[in-house]
Image (tube, helix red, strand yellow):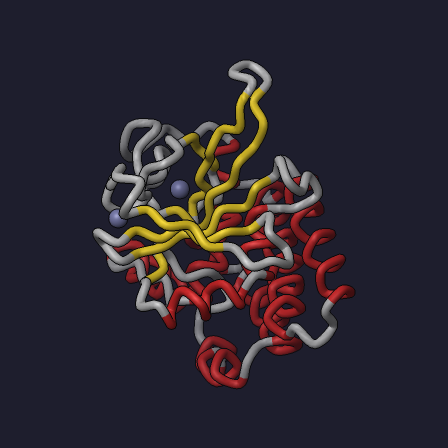
Length: 252
Ligand SMILES: [Zn+2]
Ligand SMILES: [Zn+2]
């Protein structure tokens, strides 16, 4: 069990919320992370095998977070969830597993701590080989990319974080995460003057983008959180006609 992982996310989100108190997306995300920490801890400490039935029991934890800080739209979406049975929620999770959609907030938010708990406890790999564009554990798509100094190669290595199960895996630099394009002319990076440890990596072949958090520039950054905090870059990319590889939990 790695509660320190969640504490790191929550502390960074809280710190950034203090810096920009009017950023509602960020304060919502901080609250969702706390709920996910609680869900994760419940899944680890429950004295039974982690399955969808057990996960469905954690829905009230997430609903509380949405009730307190969620958007009007999410609060409307959760109305039926408040009165749904455990079987309804299990069916909803099963439906999501067969048709995953990045815009399904409730399922995605529950499956992140669930997935993390599964690979931490050594569940066998079910998906593709390491080093590819998909998560080697669950086959999910990357939410964010980050650069980190690697002492063995004495250079900054690139990693991707899975949007579905939060596993990190290494991925080559200078390659489009979506289509594999390597032509530097087609891969254009953009970053704001402020917070320049986060950049948008676009690809002109498939018109997609992902954000990269450079931990060699700002060691206190936390990829998933700094990705959410840099919403201005998503607006920039959308204006230029690029599509994000995977929408994050706050819907950007
Ligand atoms: Zn995954
Ligand atoms: Zn591409």
